[in-house]
Length: 80
Image (cartoon, rainbow, N blue to C red):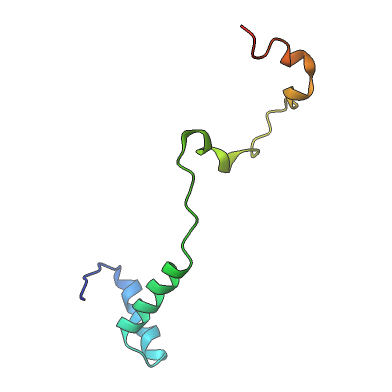
């Protein structure tokens, strides 16, 4: 199957040169790269609302300690 891909000129030039150095066709080099990406896909990021900020948890120090460790802050929690 054929496909058309628009690449920056510099990337295409480097890919052609690399293929030539390896004694391979550009098509083979591109196919190898695509297969490598498909064999090791990036993990799927959480998109559920409650999980969307999970990657940033703990990266900011507000200077306030853990409020759950002080019973005073938990008085009446869950009561109407």
